[in-house]
Image (cartoon, rainbow, N blue to C red; front, side, top):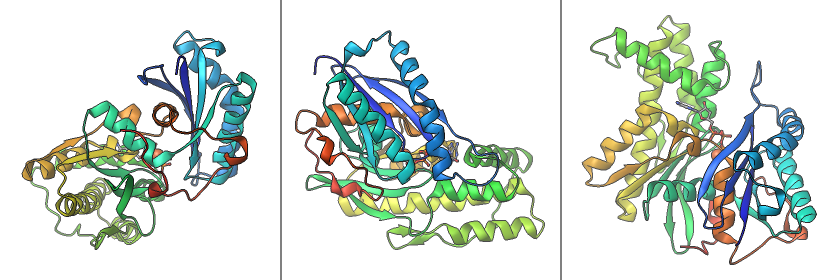
Length: 335
Ligand code: ATP
Ligand code: FE2
């Protein structure tokens, strides 16, 4: 590649353009996220938001690196998994740009992009990825040329669970960061916290996870008079410990020693601390990319497109989105 690769991310509530240069070096994304005033995200409303913002975000992304459209040599986009209406807007923008500029198009796997930007940013080699976002919660490792899902949520993503619990308590989207603040507030006011009276169900199911029971039980604690900050603390302790437990089992089974965190919930300091402790106890290491590359971002899509472009491009007739694209459907053709 001589020029820059543009990455287009629209799997859910965020529209994001990202850039990597001809050597695959990432630059910060230009993004906008729809924040519903009440209720969860409505896929069609999010898609309308994406349509409205596409043109101005693209202009701002180019301006951020003083580029003109002639500097672009490829267009990469999230082909799935995600919300159909949202993905379709990104794919349409990608097809139009690729056709208008006469540059190659490449549709990439959103989950794999989270892993690859993490590897690039952290310099880790062969990690077990704990991917904790709004819609996804997966433990993934590279085996026989694919990223395999070793465990995942059986119901809702951990971030959606945090957001829904927050919403039930009058906290707007995204609820995760506010829950983190409330949990810290609880620790400031209580010197010796215990889980007594704040117990929640066990979320681990073998190598999988389930969060809706945890959410309902946490809400019941609030309704029964426990303070919201105490319940936020307990909810984080239970939910994060469950994820870390599955990640630890994945390390034990695969014999790997690195953990890589990704997804929006990896912004959480308590999650990071728990992962560090677990990895260190096993003589390994936990890595986490900068927050702007944990949340959904176009740069990771550009980076994965750049990695794959030498081996494949996406023709227009192959460019349809796949809402249910699985992590292990993408062969790893790069190093
Ligand atoms: P995906 O499409 O991969 O499922 P997503 O669309 O949910 O991702 P992300 O940007 O990866 O988007 O993650 C957003 C989620 O991260 C939200 O649920 C939000 O509450 C959560 N989150 C962000 N910061 C924190 C934090 N500090 N603590 C806990 N959760 C957080
Ligand atoms: Fe994501």
